[in-house]
Length: 268
Image (cartoon, rainbow, N blue to C red; front, side, top):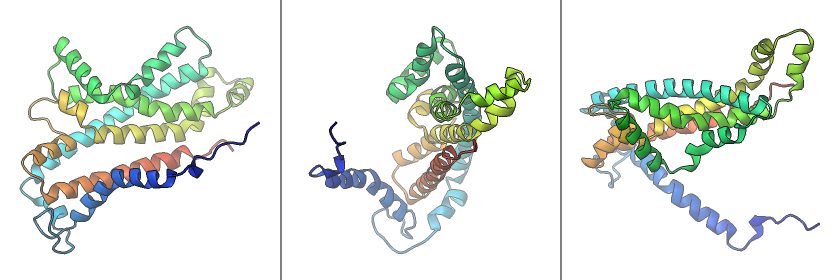
């Protein structure tokens, strides 16, 4: 049997890795640094200042950003909650439901939004809402977010459930627990790290989404990403860098929490 190949030993692997990381993260670093610039210019550095962070909350555009933030966080909270409930039910059926005819089809349908380009999902969702006569606005954004957040919530929940042996439930039922009681009192608590991880991931995906939201939102309804895009079209300003940095920091915190929680082992 041949030894496993270590790709890190290939010529140019490290160089290519650093180039890719630089291309991905250098713009984020620049935006973060210049969000603390005292100058109204986005290219001239005049010293460290929190001026533009204050402008986000008290400046001329603060009202627009506040309304957009309320929409974004409320939609993300509701969408992530409902998507997590649906994903938990789907994972229970697929992982613990035994073999049934539509099992593979069900798994494929749940995973489909991850494989289809987001622009295609956005156009398809818009066509659907127009076909059923659903007036675009807050509710269309919410429904669309619930739909595309389900696979993001499903993946960590499924992974967690697959790592839990069914002997726990069998032992509970041997002690005269019903299937519902075994699920509620044994399996569900063991799944909780995966459920929380899925919720956090769905929440941040919903909060950061722009493409689908921009297609299905109605006139006068904005989320933070679409509000930022609208402001950028009028010219890139330092306050946009400040609010982008805050969203980036929140995304990093949420993704980190999701990762840490998913690694929690409460089966011991």
